[in-house]
Image (tube, rainbow, N blue to C red; front, side, top):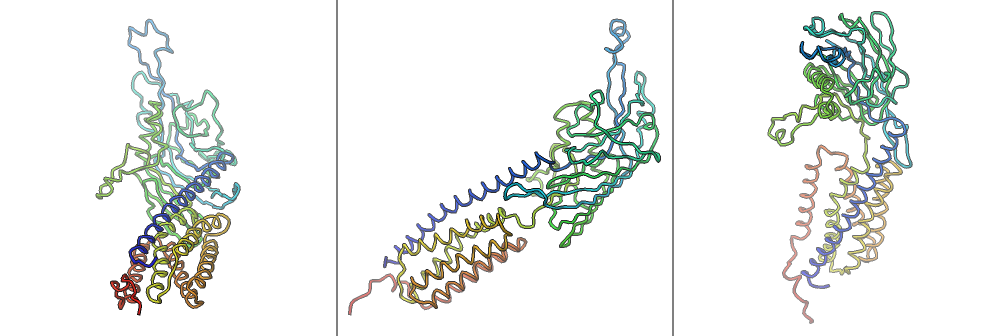
Length: 469
């Protein structure tokens, strides 16, 4: 293939075929990622899931007479009485979360990040004046008042929590059928507090909770101060309320929240949920806080649909092999062009000929790198998987090119180019905050090198047939 135009056309066609192959490799990455998520879901199903905890609250049934004087003559007392649930929240509360994060659960080659959270809560319940001074026709059933602790997955409780009220300990328990709180979208445990709910009362609550992947706290009441410490260096904070302060080191994370808006807003949501018992109102407590992306893009984020505000921390793996492999694929075409460009420069500068089949074989070896990287990274750490996969491809391509270009030096030179290429890619993967800048500098440097090496080439002369002497 002596025509320069034909050579470019073939390389372009080969790159197009390579892109089709990359599409299938990308689908394999996503498929393996789905398998990993399915494994985590199965671990959660067999053990416990990500946990959501709400601040403790008191529910007091209130009987309300709803019949007129005329209706009362024809209806029974039960027919004329409607029960609504009024809620007493904390006027203030302090949370301490001490999380021990590990990866103790495995399913096949996949694993899940789990944690044990030692939770300590101190606060004060203060009844509302509407309960202390009910209107005519209302009867507050203080003797049926209960304290509730909502936990999304009760399997994470090694033992029932114990709350201290007025120097006396009370143990939570799963409620009986007659004590069921309709509408609450989480599992819960409770105990009867009775007439103590009439007065402001201080409490202390300590318990341990185990979960997977993330921990979410939905604050209730008027104000909350929460601290968190975890032996994990790769957290992601979300939920709508950012930490007031946070410290992330190589081995641990600490954060602090102090907020009044979130607990007040969530308290209104919970009260509406318990009073209406409508799924739409109650489901808002389960849904993570969200902002409109369109409004946020213009600097005016607006909360969507009044969903619950929460403190949420996710425990990411330091190296998500599927995310990193997917990011690697974004540079695949560029790296293929670098290899083909190096081949082409040898042809132009040294007067060598490289057959299209040889281009295709080198491109195939480059494509297999991504499959090796994915399969090795599922078994070993990503760093070692990357070193092994890139070393295998560098050695194979360099060895092959030594015979194609008929020179050990040329094969060694291409090996240096490949080593620099893979090394640069690894730096790009590890420096996510500076990827665009580093990538731009790399492309600029490549163009500069090509321009320098080809500055004396007469491209018109290359496309002209050689005349015989």
